[in-house]
Length: 415
Figure (spheres, rainbow, N blue to C red):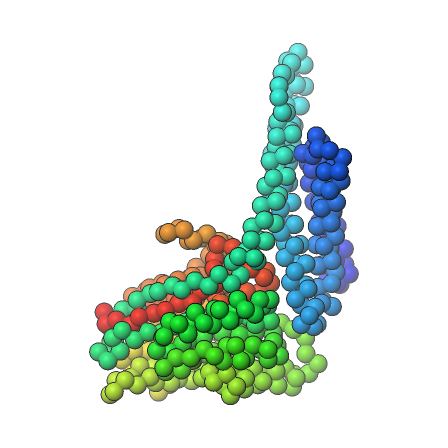
């Protein structure tokens, strides 16, 4: 579709939506002082302008790192604006249904006199709608200020039938989805790195998406993440964002060089052992466990299947324990379980828990669950297990609400 036509369609739909919500705003602020009404109306249409700018400037701003960060800000405001006015419109729709019903009743019963004292229902619903419209703005703002870097250490025990005795109590730390191109608070991120190192894990697994799109996003952060250390080193894999598939390139060679630069930074400048459809063994005396790492493999159509698990698995057949690093959790049920039943645990990320949801006690919910049935924490099927990390960073929305950034520490035990 022509970009101008798409912009006009989106803008037209937004303006119609806003005009409807604006009728409720006028009712809600009717009793306010003049300056208050002007401020509310200015904020209402100011948010509309910012949303339109996010539509209009999406492509030109996406071309540079500074532009992408500015786009992230106005897009966040735009999304909060759309959600807020959607909630407002729902209350107005309820009000319109009630008013239509009253109108119909009065037409059928012309002698009926409706007596309603105090605040009319129309004003009440309009005020309620206006109040609810502020919730997305407030929650998303809080998610940026508080949730973006509120790193949470989660501890899990992995019980494995074939675990050698020498690996009892062995600890693995997992992080995922760093997305260096999105960070806006260096000191907070560095504190997160300190938290990782403070765990004293035997090894660290990173399960993909170290950048948003380009290797140069990692240049200013390679020293920070290169500080991550563990007795048996850091193992990493590539995620769907690491290939540069979502931005334009002048030539295929430029794109290939970008990926190679990303690989070189991790392997040679950060000291991470990046596994590209290959495996390693961790040794304890005469015992060893296998670590398999593959490129991105997504079961959903729009995500690439670069990974070659047969190649990565080759040579690990005799290992009593096999641990797989695979970025996309949909890989687990699509290929790992049916074709590789001897892989004990798969470590994934990718979903971010949508950076939005609820986690209180045993209650765990996020909209992403309707796209990825395995979207956060530990899953089991038979003797095989999957852990989906909620991610260390963020993309698009520069914060988190309810689903906090995660550092996971696993302890291995014999089942």
